[in-house]
Amino acid sequence: MPTSPTALAIHKSTEHKIGKLQEFMKQIVFGGNDGIVTTFAIVAGFAGAGMEGTAQIGAIAVLLFGVANLLADATAMGLGEFLSARSEQDVYNATRAKELHEIHNNIEMERAEMFEILADHGMEEEDARQMIAVFERNPEFMADFMMQYEIGMADPSDESPAMNGLMTFLSFIVFGAVPLIPYFLREPDKTTFYLSVFATFSALVALGLLRWKATNETVFRCVGETVMVGGICAVVAFGVGLVFA
Image 1: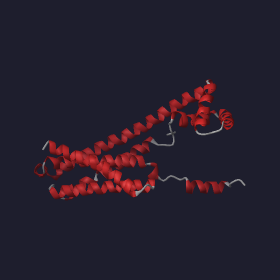
Image 2 (image 1 turned 45 degrees about the vertical axis):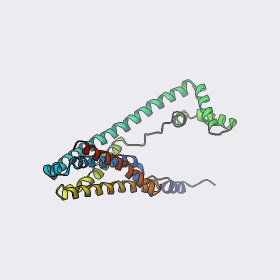
Image 3 (image 1 turned 90 degrees about the vertical axis):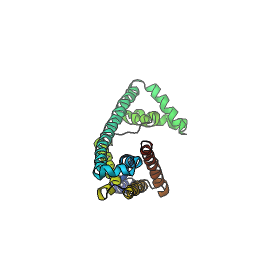
Image 4 (image 1 turned 135 degrees about the vertical axis):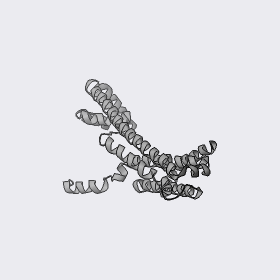
């Protein structure tokens, strides 16, 4: 018995719906992690160069460096993500147009390529030939199939370059501001730096928990990977400050 349109709509909305968190997870993690590490690099650089030097220039100077760096890098990251997504769409569309041209003008070769793909996926010869015949009557869908399975490019047309760029920018700002919070509240001394380290760690944990929420992977993996990657970058930044102390 055919499934009713209403039942199908309910099923699609409940079982296959992707939330905003999952949709923009790449941009949130990329922008958030880079924001945390980049901003902490400013703090760690001053701390590594010596607390007395940080105290002399004052919290205002640390904040000026940190906020200027935060805004400049967030803008660069957001616009970079926008251009990257636009370029990805342009490359996909150009490659797909070339594939569609081959389907219309060199169908024998496309049949052979498609047969090879289906055979590699375990399809019987007769079934593969029948499927190829169906695809030939639907060249647009055949082009989509070949883009996915021959060339290995996913269709990015549903993505919004502007929204990708905005989410990267906002994630960079929100997470990147966390290491600076202690310097808004206290004078720049050792305790303030340690509080900034704790704030940075907390921001990385929060970012890992977002990954866990979106992916349903183990919390240990999501948080552990995020803290490890961010921690390595933070240690390098602090080490650079020590080298030039």
